[in-house]
Image (cartoon, rainbow, N blue to C red; front, side, top):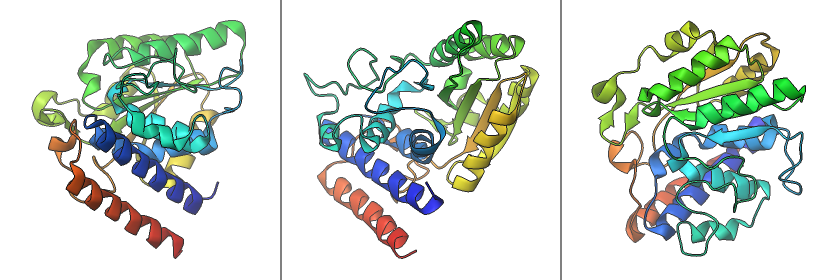
Length: 278
């Protein structure tokens, strides 16, 4: 896809996020919106996947380590054709396969149940090691929150990945700077994130999370990096695309009411209209 089509699709993913969280009256819109461009790129350009065959053996794997941002994953999967977009309104409802955290047993396209912070990267490392041991060609991607990396298990997994030279693994950190209790630097400062991953023998790339050229170049660089895993640290805007959510920690984990929903969707409609003029 070209950048314009990716941007249009990412905007639809954001609409799906807002719609799902509003319908559920609960969820995590801020960190879902900040990673919408990444999720769009992964599912529409980067990964070897097939919505008609979600369990195909040679598919690339994705683990949403920050599992509370499931609305972003669900919305991307729906846009990609894994299930109808209309099902996003069933988020967190009884009987729905779209629960508050991803469940691999019930949701097409979900490769790993996640949500207990810090654990997703460990699973991704295991998947990447398995591919190496079996001489399989698939690649493994995982997305972490910048608040999540305060978990010690993240660094145990990173140490192991670097030691095993897992060059089929890409770890992405969504560095939107905010977590549930405020600024990450005030809660438990993780900076410099890039230097920490470098210390664990990762190839590190810093990018703008909302620039598709930078995203594309980063994943190309990761594919061309041999003998070590790659960490992509992407600087993002929490609540990206919704005026009153952008840069606000308070929108980490709450749903918009009806009036706020209308404002949010109007914001995203304006973005969509502007993209259609290009």
